[in-house]
Length: 216
Image 1: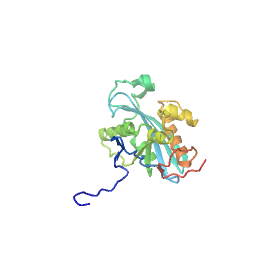
Image 2: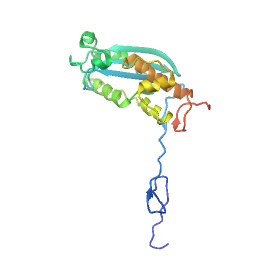
Image 3: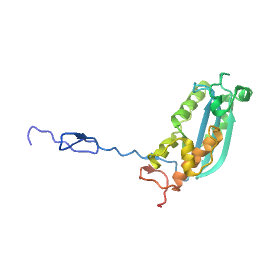
Image 4: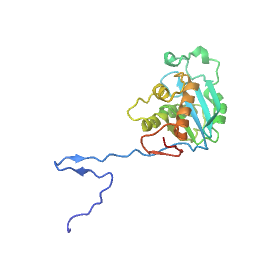
């Protein structure tokens, strides 16, 4: 028709209802890429002494190759300040780390575990990414260019409506956990990804890529 622009309706186009109200389309979740089943990823968990992201006082790392845990490492780290705010959460004190290596001194051990990894995995990954970035920057180190996968997001895609904190997810999957012990938290994250990538847990949608799944 003359004088009217033709528009193509897409999935994002609002729908005008008969009563004049506007119905917004339901957005489909974007695919969440899992590490390749034959690849390598590293689960990581930091504990910090205070609110500063550069105050890492412990880290747990678990390296997974072809969906098998091949190495575990838990390191105490001497933070830049002796004041501890979160001892009540993780149990770490200044006396426990005063003789521990600094982040920069511990980095060679950590870097060896990260070598060749396609992903870093963490629960609430923005926190661990921020700590890693801040500690590397403070130590004069290059920040690893390895993408993070968040197991909180992974749990939300698999179990909508369920609680997605790490203890709740671990209880649902039967994964042992000593919460806020960095080695245990890191291994729990690794086990969550292994379960998802191997198809051991049924999923309510198909918004996953990168891992094989068996039908239930």
